[in-house]
Amino acid sequence: LERRAASPDSIDANAAERGLEQLWVYTSFYEPQDYLDRGDPTRALAILEVAQAMRPSHPDVCYNQARAHARLRHTSQAIEALECAARAPLSADRVESDPDLRSLGGAPAFRALVTRLRTYPTGMAGRYGG
Image (cartoon, rainbow, N blue to C red):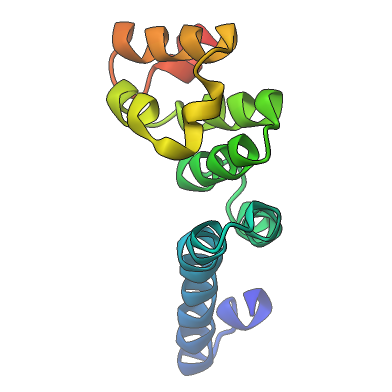
């Protein structure tokens, strides 16, 4: 699809771009959310790897990876993913109130991240605090 998106044929290129965008939306949000809703964070992570390959370190993908890792009790991976997500606007209230992230609440690195999210301007926590 990437080759077709770069095609000089505008119809073919537009179709490929739409296909890539649809793949992005499904792999970054719909499919992982469906697996998380079904209680299968391992499959959610597998789908998120596809999205991560398409748009490396995208904050939405990082946040969903954090949710899945937290459900699996992969504390360090979850916090690392949250640090990635914090490079863009991210609310400390959202992080603290997300039930998927509840298992991280006692981790000092999680508490430090929440403090940075409250201290630095939105979207700056990853740049200055981590």
